[in-house]
Image (cartoon, rainbow, N blue to C red):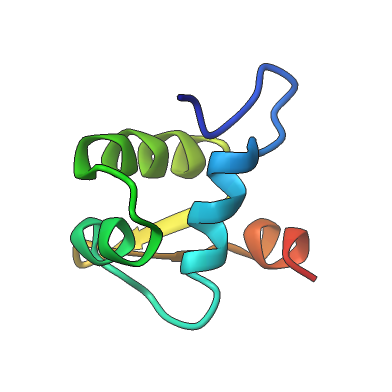
Length: 73
């Protein structure tokens, strides 16, 4: 299930992932635990969200970018 739609907007799954990152940077395993999604899906979703500019990766953890923060306001 994709996290970013063809028009460049996060899907429902993408928004769930972004909301999990709202309060802190998390490792993929932590996002999977928090959202109940399988780890393989979280990893691919985080890659999609990163490529779309909604999240950033630092030291193996993911956090919201400014674009991601704007979406959740």
